[in-house]
Image 1 (cartoon, one colour):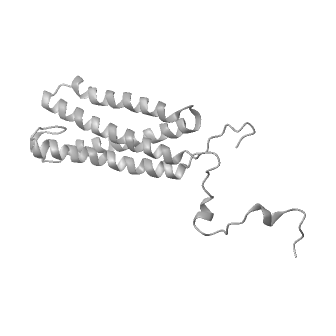
Image 2 (cartoon, one colour):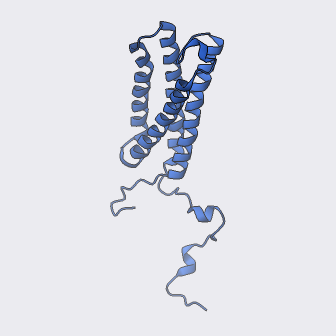
Image 3 (cartoon, one colour):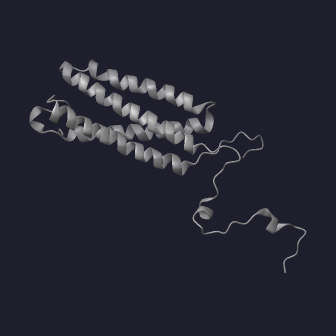
Length: 174
């Protein structure tokens, strides 16, 4: 901690492992959404009809973009947790607005209305998943003063728990 006590500890391992898990969920939302839209509803979205129920390489790129968006959101969250006053509120607003942009963008493209609506719904669900999952991760990754986790080596039993009384200056070692 700095001399002014302004440093905010963040459990980066917890934050980024949650971010990676969120990226997997976001990619799966896109894949499942595409399967439902193309396979069940019969709406040709993200690829021509002859591409099959999961689409083509465009679907894979779309899923990877959703995963990348989750990782970028994790980076944004990390910066906000370190610097912003009320980081979760700012993160919620930013994610809400970015999700709105992602949901409205399909309507600016030249496609059938059914495809536009379907893509907007997939974008909305992926954005909500990213926002809610990372919002929950933020609650566990921000370390409150006095509640800092023990060092990693002690958690795994490599180093013994030793308190400061074992190292008093006035005691001599035998």
